Length: 396
Image 1: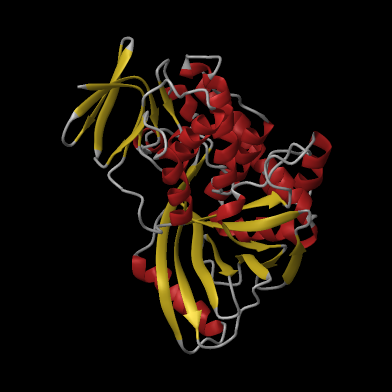
Image 2 (image 1 turned 135 degrees about the vertical axis):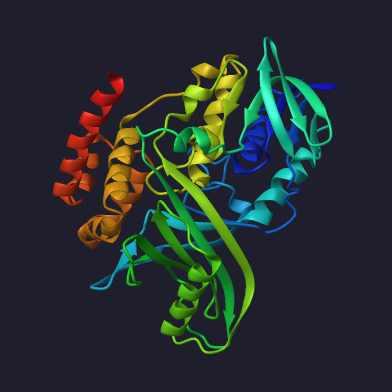
């Protein structure tokens, strides 16, 4: 069996970003690294979006830098929030809402990794991995490998589904990139959330990212416990396209996703030599499902950690935002039909840049309160009461 210092089981966003950060640090050139994934990452299988300040490129004297500036395919400085009763333009400055296409990210990272002889990739399916004393074993469908430590990004839902302490919702969606024969889109405005669609007892909204007057990603998204059939998502997209007045169009690409939304304590499954990263490690922002920017922060922190520590079980810090997310998910889990009401209360009069800063987990306690105060107080007070009881019940 071939032996490596580090093996990444799965090569999704978190794995690729962590390896990329390792390369940029120049601290791991003497370490052999293997990435294993059954997906070769040669297709545009997803779109990531995030908000970020419009900062200079890396290397600027300010010390700050734009995240992956060379692969941002579109930026918006204004977003739209809507429900059945109102539409509001959200001025995002100093932030911009940014889009990254999956294939552009994969190409950027793999082009860089190919320059380093200590980094390898095998296109195989991981079927098992385990820690055996001071080393680990990873088994694929065709062979086995040993290593010192494992970074696992393969999401295993059973531990979450088999517990009742923390709610577990799905952010699930299907999106179509379409090209219309008519100029119907305003490429300067991203539709962040449109709750004017029928809620049907859930939290459902449309998400529209126009890249030109005739082209856009139109995505039907739910925060709920149950998934839908493919036809249900696509029928809603068809209805929305018709509502926009689009008569003739072609579908350029399709994407489908399911992102876990939970405050489950994934880090408790980490061991000295195995760490769970990405969605498998709780790196997804639990209350929103946003992953890209959160992963940039987590991967940088993990690579810094690796330069001074070797025990993966020490890599975690719980903060106040973890508890905020937990309360929000408690509300959505108990009253999924009221998700639109919560978001509308937040965005109807709330300061959009402060909300984004809050969701980036960069606000002070006073700023937290300014955001939280906009939410329906009765729902969250009830959720807080139930959560206190819940903690006491499980701690006994």
